[in-house]
Amino acid sequence: MPQCRGRRLLHDGDPVTGRNRVLGEAATGERGSAVVDFVMVGGLLTMFFLAIIQLTLVLHVRNTLIDAAASGARYGTLADRGAADAEERAGALVGMALNADFAQDISTSEVTFQGLRTLEVTIKAPMPVIGLIGPRDMLEVKGHAAVQP
Image (cartoon, rainbow, N blue to C red; front, top):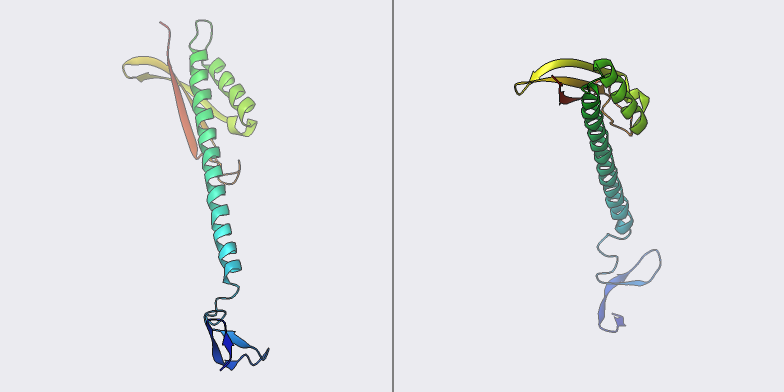
């Protein structure tokens, strides 16, 4: 049996190369599995990273719409303004911050909110699923402001 400085060799040689193999090296059948592991883990991490980016985009759109609805409601309750001004202001803010497609369905109404007469601005917009593309009217936000007596 051939010797290899402290390592034991297999008693039979490799039939392809004619060389003896060291026990523990390539005898386990895992040769090349690091590439597969890298691809699988890399793909998983990429999908995880893209999901986090998409979640931040959804939250950004939602928070922008909430801010535009609240700002539009406050603008509409000023002394010389009305509900139409609130819709116009909210639409301008959404169009400036996001896209004009997000400002297509804006409505206003006077409601009683916590015992106060308020102007309510409602914005219905698409829910961004892939980038800014998504199903319409899935995201609905409301903003309130007290009407001046």
